[in-house]
Length: 106
Image (cartoon, rainbow, N blue to C red):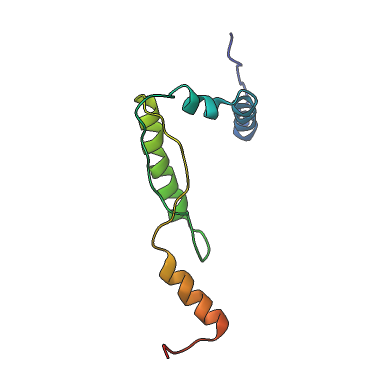
């Protein structure tokens, strides 16, 4: 198989081609299925943003978290990705109180 030569690179187009290949060939699912029966690795993480507007720090944190999962997959572990929950409860409660007009603890 020969790889395409790109003389004038359109990175968005290349990314779309690669994503289509991965989707058409179920590459991500295969990375999990081919590790069936191997030791598992679980990375517990919360949602990227429970309230407020997402910022660049959310993208950076997500990328760093993904590195661990990819590394463990390459090391032979079966890594199922599942979003979890973390301690965003208090900020959400405060936002709900604000919307409901609750101003005291009584």
